[in-house]
Length: 233
View (spheres, one colour):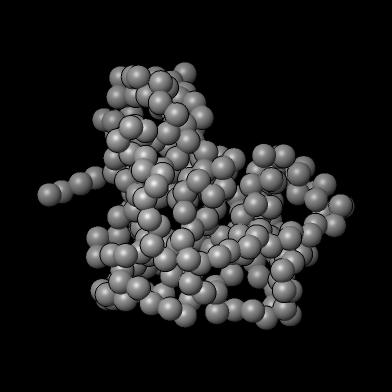
């Protein structure tokens, strides 16, 4: 079987660092699906606006930095602190044999104002900017929702959000650059602690690419402090 992208994703996250580890964690994170080639037609989207959510089938591409990796049957989920192992098929690790991702996103609106370039606006995606999308399917609650299902190791591993500290003058500058919605999405992404689970150095300064900015921050115990940012918007 040969497959080709039907669309590409536009996201504020320009690298894998900081991307939410699952879809839906950043509920207000805005993204855009830009259809391409023969699939860029409003007819292909007819009726989509009647659904609240969509399934996206996409690729962990070269930009996700996992191409060329040999197959590993065991992985270390971040949810388990990076120390315990589970089978790759019992996880959602990006290091998969065929590098396919599956995400459920909330539909915001369908823009068909430009007949040759329809755009699907979504919320809560965990895709990096430029990610190729291979298929889009509607989320159907009666068939897709099983609220009583076991979540495996995710049911047993706790997680606590970090307190994000931003000096007011810095917050004002970021809001001016990003707008209120993206600023709030950035704070929520940082609260989920984007650092590798093996790193816990309070003196280390990290950089998170977000849109055209590089956000500098440090983490001490349960608090994350935004120190500054560079770049233009």
